[in-house]
Length: 180
Image: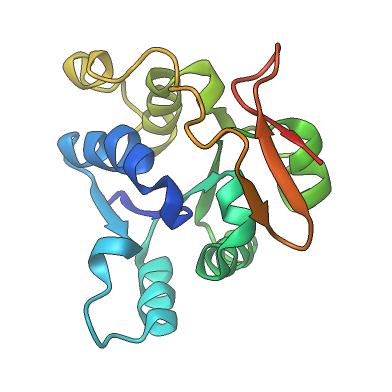
């Protein structure tokens, strides 16, 4: 198995995704396609993303409040869902600063899929991904370098436009909730 992985996420989540998902996967020797790095100046975005999705064995989708507001992120989300349903590819959802109610309302096609939860910590997210992708236990040094619990939302109070206003809030039961 080649284990080619496409990682789809909102550009505003790039730092967390690169630090806690892309870099560790690469350190494990897996081939990761990151649209923010792998589409070159002058390339067709649609063609590049379509080609990468066709070649990928897995699509990791980081579902966050930012995903709701970015056009290309939403397009990759839709394409990954259709690719997942039409092939043997596997979509691996990661919920980042979201809860089930938001997923059920805004991403109904994901509500029956077991996600990895960033609120459980990036170490757990990475372990879940590696369990599926590589069918092996990840290198302990790489897992230990990831934070056990996610960072608190840094954009608390900001508003994101996606057909309606959304505000990230701190909640008692999750690390960053959504308030409408």
